[in-house]
Image (tube, rainbow, N blue to C red):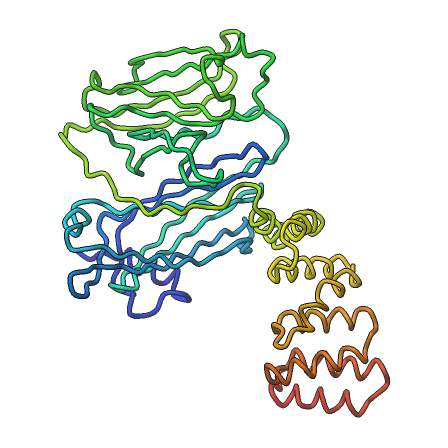
Length: 431
């Protein structure tokens, strides 16, 4: 049989997948769970599972090298966030058999602003020249203070794990790390772990509020458990376990309902299956650990996402917050300067950029943005100095030459403007 999925995926990602990967498509599966921090930031937690992972060897050691690309685009197809991460790992020969027998799970997470999105993830195995890609649609709700229940996360184990320095880890809810897999299949020797969040739960009506867990087997009610909200130690992160030793192999649905005065208020459902097998190969996991929630990293990422979505005032708030926490950061400063430019706060943009422009070898983006700022402020003589520095460090291009030409033209130096624009047209006559 001819498998054409690799061709479809290669055509979709041909701009970033080299041709030597074209016929080497890896099967994979995706699980996504969206959580919300107590401070109000939503995080997209996801895992990509590969049934097998090709590795390379040298001597008695083995290794793999992956490259992960993630893209989030809005309903109009505009990219609002993208990232690339290298992932490398080395191990000894005595662990090779263990890795051969187990699937590989890659866990990651990132913050995301409210909206409806398409999320795409591409993984390239640079060791074996294989690639895989997955897509999903996401909805991040607006922070309107309405009571909500997150989707259900079903796992086969919950491990008590306190992260150092309050750092963040995918599929870590409250104090527990939830071990799970995309196929949602369990043994009857497992415990079914049901984890979820409830946002804006009113503690004043806790005595009247309960959680009702209903498990359906082949669409018929199989088991029900009801517990008062006060029986749970955390009012945001909830976890309930069900021993499966009396569950026979079948297809099941679990529904979790928030009940108030014995009336269902909100609910979520999830399907799962019990297998007749005596064992399931559980994965070995590579998981990303993120900084603590107070880190300026999150304010910066959210600021960039608001910028790309066109919400410049919200972006300014988050980027100012990031720079306040980490003064002197080149990335944060440049992102905030762009926002000040877009909001026509040119003097603020200039004050941020000047210290970086005074460095021995300033970045091209800094010099170009400072040149645009001088142009908007009418400081034409300063533009020429800055852009001459751009040319000496980075060479000629039409963007710089056009800006030089406009600056000369504004100060009535027609000769200088003519030379700059003629040179620009010489480089690209189709302007």
